[in-house]
Image (cartoon, rainbow, N blue to C red; front, side):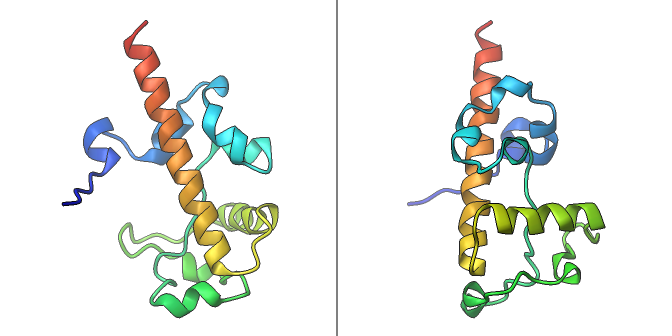
Length: 125
Protein backbone atom coordinates (compact mmCIF):
# COMPACT_ATOMS: atom_id res chain seq x y z
CA UNK A 1 0.00 0.00 0.00
CA UNK A 2 1.26 3.46 -0.88
CA UNK A 3 0.59 6.42 1.34
CA UNK A 4 1.15 9.95 0.07
CA UNK A 5 1.79 12.67 2.61
CA UNK A 6 2.07 16.37 1.92
CA UNK A 7 5.10 17.97 3.55
CA UNK A 8 2.83 20.92 4.38
CA UNK A 9 1.06 18.72 6.94
CA UNK A 10 4.35 17.96 8.68
CA UNK A 11 6.23 21.23 8.33
CA UNK A 12 3.30 23.65 8.49
CA UNK A 13 4.33 25.82 5.54
CA UNK A 14 4.62 25.55 1.77
CA UNK A 15 7.88 24.31 0.30
CA UNK A 16 8.37 27.69 -1.36
CA UNK A 17 8.12 29.46 2.01
CA UNK A 18 10.40 26.95 3.73
CA UNK A 19 13.06 27.21 1.01
CA UNK A 20 13.06 31.00 1.29
CA UNK A 21 14.03 30.73 4.98
CA UNK A 22 16.92 28.30 4.55
CA UNK A 23 20.45 29.59 5.14
CA UNK A 24 22.66 29.87 2.05
CA UNK A 25 24.71 26.80 2.98
CA UNK A 26 21.65 24.54 3.39
CA UNK A 27 21.29 23.57 -0.28
CA UNK A 28 23.58 20.55 -0.17
CA UNK A 29 21.48 18.24 -2.36
CA UNK A 30 19.89 20.76 -4.70
CA UNK A 31 23.16 22.49 -5.53
CA UNK A 32 24.65 19.20 -6.77
CA UNK A 33 21.92 18.91 -9.40
CA UNK A 34 21.15 22.49 -10.33
CA UNK A 35 22.79 23.84 -13.49
CA UNK A 36 23.18 27.28 -11.87
CA UNK A 37 23.75 28.27 -8.22
CA UNK A 38 20.93 30.85 -8.22
CA UNK A 39 18.47 28.20 -9.35
CA UNK A 40 19.42 25.83 -6.53
CA UNK A 41 17.89 28.12 -3.93
CA UNK A 42 14.34 28.51 -5.21
CA UNK A 43 11.30 26.54 -6.17
CA UNK A 44 10.40 26.66 -9.85
CA UNK A 45 7.04 27.23 -11.49
CA UNK A 46 4.93 24.55 -13.13
CA UNK A 47 1.97 24.86 -15.53
CA UNK A 48 -0.35 22.46 -13.72
CA UNK A 49 -3.44 23.59 -15.63
CA UNK A 50 -1.64 23.11 -18.96
CA UNK A 51 -0.71 19.48 -18.26
CA UNK A 52 -4.13 18.01 -19.00
CA UNK A 53 -3.04 14.69 -20.53
CA UNK A 54 0.03 12.61 -21.36
CA UNK A 55 0.42 14.12 -24.82
CA UNK A 56 1.53 17.39 -23.19
CA UNK A 57 4.80 15.70 -22.20
CA UNK A 58 5.72 15.62 -25.89
CA UNK A 59 5.26 19.38 -26.38
CA UNK A 60 8.51 20.89 -27.67
CA UNK A 61 7.72 24.53 -26.89
CA UNK A 62 7.57 26.20 -23.53
CA UNK A 63 3.93 27.04 -22.67
CA UNK A 64 2.78 30.67 -22.77
CA UNK A 65 2.51 32.58 -19.51
CA UNK A 66 -1.28 32.25 -19.28
CA UNK A 67 -0.87 28.47 -19.01
CA UNK A 68 0.76 28.98 -15.59
CA UNK A 69 -2.48 30.17 -14.02
CA UNK A 70 -3.16 28.31 -10.76
CA UNK A 71 -6.84 27.42 -10.34
CA UNK A 72 -6.01 26.13 -6.86
CA UNK A 73 -4.66 29.51 -5.70
CA UNK A 74 -6.56 31.56 -8.30
CA UNK A 75 -3.45 33.50 -9.32
CA UNK A 76 -1.32 34.11 -12.37
CA UNK A 77 2.45 34.05 -12.22
CA UNK A 78 4.23 37.38 -12.61
CA UNK A 79 6.38 38.33 -15.58
CA UNK A 80 9.49 37.77 -13.41
CA UNK A 81 8.28 34.32 -12.34
CA UNK A 82 7.55 33.40 -15.95
CA UNK A 83 11.04 34.56 -16.94
CA UNK A 84 12.50 32.33 -14.18
CA UNK A 85 10.51 29.36 -15.52
CA UNK A 86 11.80 30.07 -19.05
CA UNK A 87 15.34 30.31 -17.66
CA UNK A 88 14.89 26.90 -16.02
CA UNK A 89 13.74 25.41 -19.35
CA UNK A 90 16.93 26.72 -20.96
CA UNK A 91 19.33 25.96 -18.09
CA UNK A 92 18.12 22.36 -17.79
CA UNK A 93 18.37 22.03 -21.59
CA UNK A 94 14.77 20.98 -21.92
CA UNK A 95 13.54 19.96 -25.36
CA UNK A 96 10.13 18.68 -24.24
CA UNK A 97 7.70 19.28 -21.41
CA UNK A 98 8.73 15.84 -20.12
CA UNK A 99 12.25 17.23 -19.60
CA UNK A 100 10.86 20.26 -17.78
CA UNK A 101 8.52 18.09 -15.72
CA UNK A 102 11.35 15.77 -14.67
CA UNK A 103 13.68 18.67 -13.77
CA UNK A 104 10.86 20.32 -11.80
CA UNK A 105 10.09 17.15 -9.83
CA UNK A 106 13.73 16.41 -9.10
CA UNK A 107 14.34 19.99 -7.98
CA UNK A 108 11.26 19.88 -5.73
CA UNK A 109 12.38 16.59 -4.20
CA UNK A 110 15.91 17.86 -3.57
CA UNK A 111 14.65 21.12 -2.08
CA UNK A 112 12.45 19.09 0.24
CA UNK A 113 15.45 16.92 1.18
CA UNK A 114 17.49 20.05 1.92
CA UNK A 115 14.61 21.44 3.99
CA UNK A 116 14.28 18.26 6.04
CA UNK A 117 18.05 18.02 6.48
CA UNK A 118 18.14 21.59 7.78
CA UNK A 119 15.18 20.90 10.05
CA UNK A 120 16.86 17.75 11.38
CA UNK A 121 20.19 19.53 11.95
CA UNK A 122 18.46 22.33 13.87
CA UNK A 123 16.69 19.78 16.08
CA UNK A 124 20.06 18.34 17.11
CA UNK A 125 21.77 21.64 17.94
